[in-house]
Image 1 (cartoon, rainbow, N blue to C red):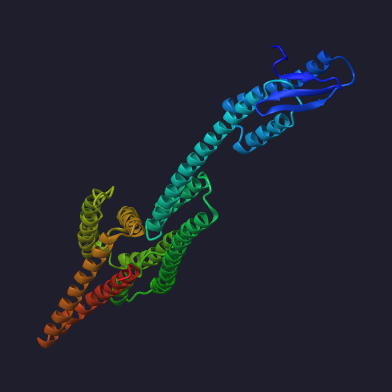
Image 2: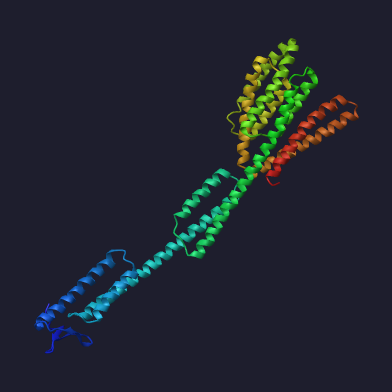
Length: 409
């Protein structure tokens, strides 16, 4: 490129560059010829051209920030404006202006993209908050707890919003999690309290059962054991470990008594063998209820089997543990299913609890009416028998009412 159109050196050694605004002083040159002076300042111009070219590539091919790009453009522009080079400085300004325009477009694009990202993040967090607030009222303790933990992980993966919005959404999100945790803690505390109460009740029943195990007053003691069994069933479930141990002691105490009674009434062996046959049929019928698929039907069917079972009487001692163990296994499986259903508390469970309470209340009212009628007719024996049945039903009703209260109704 010829330098003649862009610069000259006067007789004093002053170097000029030609621009659209006229000649501008570049500098002074005293060390050599005018050609050497122009060549020097042309090289400085070439350096600016290279620097602008590099900056253009960085802006167009990298993720250089708008702030850094603008600073670099202004730095080069200052060098151009100071006229310390010989060449088409106006062309360089135009390239810098064009590049500044590209940077501004990119700045706006990034600003818009950031706004879109922020809007998406805000909507995503609002959805997380809405779901967390819905889960806060759930009684599906395990599933809801796991889902809330997953929501926290999702939240952590989302970008932060502006401080105020982010803090407000996080406050709602955190409050929902805290509310759920508080309700879950209260739920299991109540469950633990109920089981502890059941354990204490059963401890007392076991103590009385063991105290009666050596009795030879066969009739009243056997009747008392039946009452203790009704109280046991009405007491509810204790903690799993305690339940098994207490049951073994309770049943063991009864076994001691009924074994002794069996030895005294050896002539009843034939009847007991017949009882065993009937109970084997019943336990086979009960075992067909497993695995439990329809809890309501299984519970009703087992209740029917159990009522017939209780009406049969005792079986030979050597078969008792086996046959009763099979029956207890079925009862325990149904109780476990009931407990699982109770843990998954839902509106249907409330309705069933209310229905059961109503049925038990009707049964209690009916028994009271029958007792009154029997006493009015002078049939005290029948009235006494019905009274014992009433005690068991009343205990079940009390337990059902207590369970209903835990549903909030």
